Image (cartoon, rainbow, N blue to C red; front, side):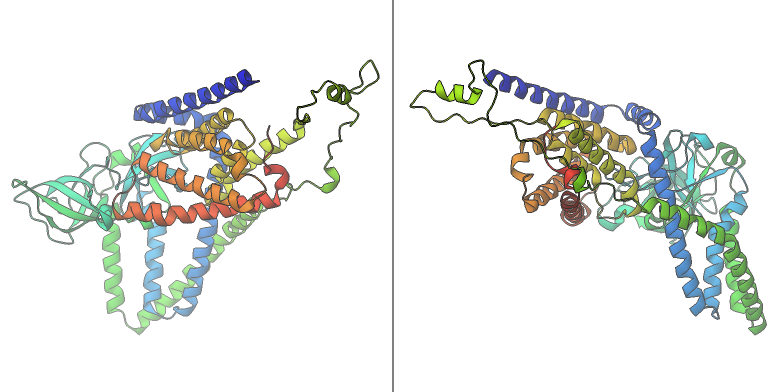
Length: 545
């Protein structure tokens, strides 16, 4: 028996070491190798999860758009007679329709997928090679430049934003008097989200408010895309060149639907696309300032006609959003097992197995027991059966599906991590070695969706699953509070490890993330885990497989 226990312990340790070694190898591999392997996973075994996450993002976008439309209608009722309402709605219409009308063709619209922990300077888009998206294509909005595509698969793509440390763009002033290279301003706090223009010739002096656009050098970004506006000059040791602090044209909180410029459109150039929009805005403001009462009446009539046309065009899309949202959010409660379907295990026969002499095996053992020894205790090890195993894997798959379907709908700074719950609930039913393997495979799936820190989730979840399997007798008993405390600690440890491994954030933002948002997310995850454990006990009770 002791030899068997030692052999099983060595097997668990060996599986943990293999999972850790593979995770470290994936984390330290070259960036191109990680992206290729992640793309292969997304196109094969993870294809259903990728499609599910993309559809969920579409539903969320439709719900948010409908809410924004309702809010806009409510404000329009109160401000319908004011010129400010007319100006705001005209600006909104120009942003939504003007850019696409000026570009005419050669672009692909895309929505943003929910951001996961790991790389806050990259984003996932719902457009891939099936619609012509390729690497090194610029990503823009109606306000200006967002970033560049770095990796593509069939249905999704990854883009780095202007805040990424590797971002560079050759830029110039709008009057073409000064040229330089724009890159992120790697500072602390709020200044981290600014840009700086380096290498500007010393004879070229830029005033505050000067518009900076892409220069077209480098064959990646066509000339004329707004990058930002000059804030002021920075003091640097370089005396032969100037460096300017630049406010980005597209702020992080304003990044929503984007356009990916295809090579055919980039080769033709975008001169006049954004500058004509600025000229139109200036002309509109001048007309509004110089208009009289007759012009106001005409403007109100035009506004009413536009609103009526807009309502007729969006009626069908709103109905479709209601239909899709209802189908996704409605989930039948099939996780409860009815009492009539539960089969109680039959009590074994107390008489034991009959021996040829007519005595039971228990009596025979008692008869041969030494007088001074304690009574023998017979421990019943009951196999869980196929039904218990199926329930366990069904619960795991439901939680993993919720991570890619329910979580994006309620995404925020403090979100629920269903993947961590799935790994913990599965680990308490397995040996530590197999629990580590389950955490490793789950982490690979998460890493494939965010290849910027590929291997980090697999490493952390392998160690957490191994530890959860060892501690299952303490935290996964019938004490619900201890279970919630353990889920809270595991989720917080996961967030801390992922933040440190990915190297995201620094200074005050790092402490705020680790000491405020991460504990809130851990508490919410623990609360959901306790609710699931209480309501769906047959699926998630800690019974060994």
